[in-house]
Image (cartoon, rainbow, N blue to C red):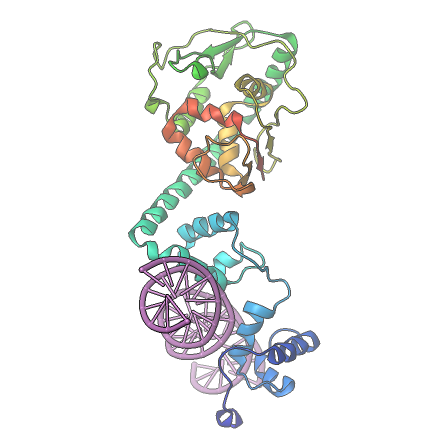
Length: 337
DNA sequence: AAGCTCATCAACCGCCCTTAG
DNA sequence: TCTAAGGGCGGTTGATGAGCT
């Protein structure tokens, strides 16, 4: 009854009001906002107090601009959840639903049709990612075989064995000899199994080999032995160190360095993993850490050093074709989980 | 310099859900 | 079971400042 007689203050909060509210919360904790007015001497209603605390005074709030990485999270989550701002905010510690909502409306809402297109693309991305993850899950049974293969690779590396490549003659010199590993010397092990074929379907979908604009003289389906990788030491200290990518909660990271040559990349892949595993790793991880240096092939803007969604790299690369994908070796990047 | 436009964001509003009595 | 209080959430408004003409 008494409350109806109170003229609640509205509008911007003063420093004194902030101080009173902060003191009150320190003493009594969050909640019971209706009592704030009485106990703290504020002429604000309960909702106003709660909002002020939640959106502005809370000590764990992150100040400053939304980072590109946060923006990508917002975009992805909005594609997934729509306008469920509080749900999105839970994935961004220190950011409030109000802040995210405002950011979205400011930066994306007005783009109208374009944003809906983006949203559709993002949904497609998410579906694609989910598909990859599902594929990966389905292929867990094959994991052991791949682990064996990896071990074999290590053995091969040590014994300087021959590697069989799938070769495509490339017009561009840069692309003339880079290959992706399929199988090993027959004497060691032929890994052209159904599972490998499925893996290639998967990989081919990622890089869209059929869309490679550069002519090849050998058929896409043609397998041939072409070259042996260099027996010299695989890595200098600054060269990339690839670790076996994911698989069910295992740490995944790929550390690269600037000016990494493609052979080093290939060797690294040979040393540690298969392409599709790298692809899955990239798609499965949260972000890539990308440095500006030597990433001019990246299909997105990089400011200094930042985290990006791997999909933002891989999806455009998919359109460029497999060989351009190899340019990833020129990046300094890491995959984090 | 003045006026206008636009972006930004704090704050408010109304609806809804949960919970306690 | 009903009701009111408390609180969460998404949509909207309005003040402010920066940039442009």
